[in-house]
Length: 239
Image 1: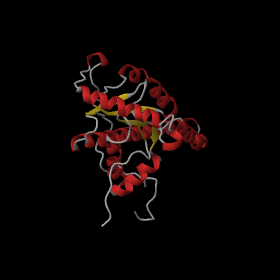
Image 2: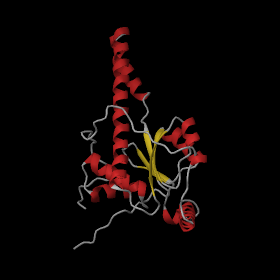
Image 3: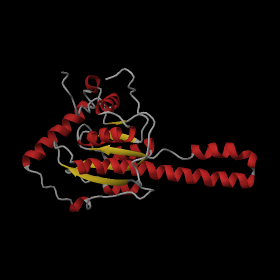
Image 4: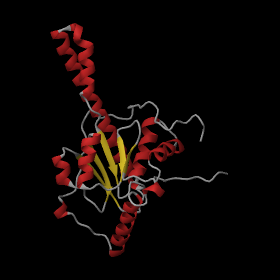
């Protein structure tokens, strides 16, 4: 890795996004209709690894330094583990999360809680301990692109409307009114998760960083690791 590589993403570009605001929202059926077709062994490995992650982020945190979720600095994304009902409430109030990308084939999401919190879910079911398909990775990347594009369009419209009202009432107050309008537009964030926030969801995150910020895979992984150290996805032996 070159020394000039920053741990923060460079300026974002949106050339790859051709959606003016229409978002793909896909959720499974309600929890009561969700079909869990995992084998007994798959259920066991899921339970063991999930509880391992819980221990690593709580009791053994002084050793691991792991968190249940971590914001990817200077972006709209928060990468983490499968959320509880309370996690969703905290993410909504603390980070203004309004979108969830769920990569868990084994978990349909807390649909009722998300509905109450005005969250929209993009469900991309991928089996635990499996690599997401190219199609699944692109769906996740495209969803993030669509959310950021829609948010930018909405912010521009709101700022234009506020400025027009300010000009009509008092041109001298335009600057202060515009600043107030910007402050009233909190950044809409996306919670990207799988079971542990290390593999499936981290794969989407790293692909989005590569795609959206024109990074190399190594640069994107360095950024991801600086924000969420347990997301070790890719390694290459030096020749």
